Amino acid sequence: MTMPPRQAAFRADFRSLIAPAYAGWLHVAVIAVLGGAAIWVCARQISAPAWYEWLVIPFAFAVSNVFEWWLHRYVMHRPVRGLMGIYRRHTLAHHEFFTDAEPAFDSSRDFRIVFFPPYALVAFMAMSLVPAYVLGLLGLVNAGWLLLITNVGLYLNYELFHFCCHVKNDGIVRRIPLVNSIRRHHIAHHNPGIMMERNFNLTYPVADWFFGTSDLRCGLLKHVFNGYDTSAVRGDLKRRAR
Amino acid sequence: MSATRARITQGKASLIGGIVVGIASMLLWMAVTRELGFEGPVTLGAGLLVSAALAVWIRLADL
Image (cartoon, one colour):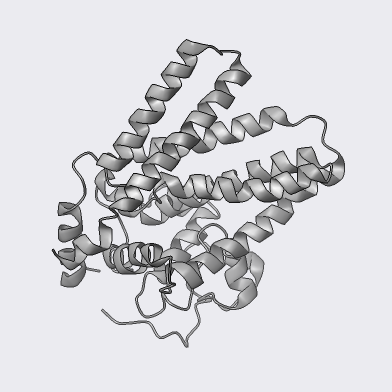
């Protein structure tokens, strides 16, 4: 597919406005180092957790998956007062820069529109501190640290998978289970005709399957391990032709 | 000002974001160096320098 002229014009304009001081790989390094350091420090605090404290991991995974879906559907794609910056950055910029016709970045300067700003990671860490503190007050200190590790880990997971969705050469990612599924899932989401109503997960399409917002008509396992297969894509989608 | 500039320029967001990330990185620096047993004024000063540089870069990069 060739890039639509509107998308090409937006890319040229957007790139001309990226600050000269911006460095894509430094952006990635800041996120990775801050997240990795937080995980390492939290892991050092864990001491002989009880078996039931480990249950916080699947619980946090489920809550994070739904939160990721909810945030993408109702904040990143809806103009919400007080959160307009997120809407503008995502719907009006990210989705203009990347479409299903051309979903790949060209250079590391394009990371500016791929990865969240580092303060988003700090915000998610701060949000996770509240339930972790409550768990500590309840005597489940290890569960609190495990919760922080899981949430930060899933944030890094999100960024990594999103990067894999927009990388140009898919020679490697198309062969990695889970990653290939979310890549097809997310690129389909970049079709302007369905972006407001389909495929909001960016890690594992569990909430999309559960809430019926996936472009696939199949079970959970098929969703998660679908890869590039398009045989289960719904036939009633309002895809916009390009 | 073009429509694209209005969409991507964050202005105050990168200022606040830089300060927030600078503070968070300083806290993490202190936590990491304490775990490693490298405490003291030199370590603290290095952490302040790194965190301040990071905050300034985020502002300059309008990130």
